[in-house]
Image 1: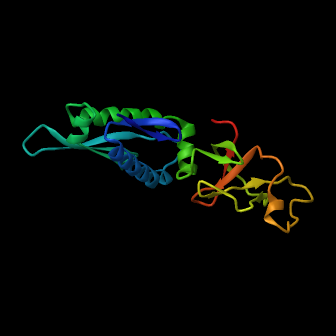
Image 2 (image 1 turned 90 degrees about the horizontal axis):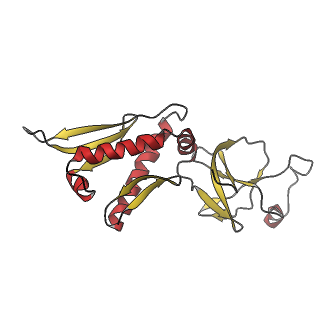
Image 3 (image 1 turned 60 degrees about the horizontal axis):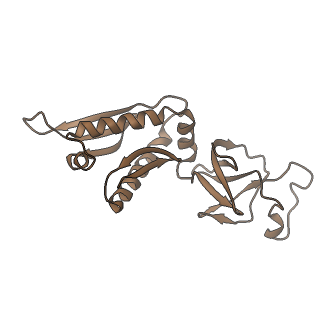
Length: 201
C-alpha cells in the first residue's frame, strides 16, 4: 500500500514500501528538504535533476541522486526501483524528479516552504482549524499570547491598535480574545510571525 509524501497538503510522491519503512523514508525526505529550502530563493524557479552512478565495466545504473538546486534530496537504489515497480533505477528517479519539478513550479508552495518549513499546514485553536498562509506578519507590537499551545506551538493573535493595546492585563485569562480571531500567528524558525487564517489556500 502506497503512503503519500505530502508537502503542505500537496502530494509529492507515493512511497511503495511497508508502512513503517515508508514513514521513516518520508521523515528523512522532510529532514533533507528542511535543510535545503532555507538556502533557496522562493521567487526563482527551483531545478530538480538526477545524478546516477554505474557498476564498474557495466552500463547498468546502480543508484541515483535526486537533487534540488544542486543539493542532494533523495537517494535511490535498485531495491527502491523494484519496490516501486520499475525495472531500472533511472526509471524511478526520473519519474520522481518530474513529479517534484512540477510541484516546485508552484510559487505559493516555494514561499510556504521557505518561510513555513517545520510549521504545521493547519492548526486547531479553540475548536477552529486555521491554515498556514505564505505571509510573514509585520510585528507592530500588537501580538499577544496567553501561552496556550496547540501541537506544541504557542498561539499568538493581534489586538487592535487602540488605546488599550498596551495596557497590561493582570491575568493570562484576560488576554484571551472573547471571540475566536480571524487570524492567528505562529513563530517560525527565524522568529518571524507567520499567518494562519480560517480559510485554506
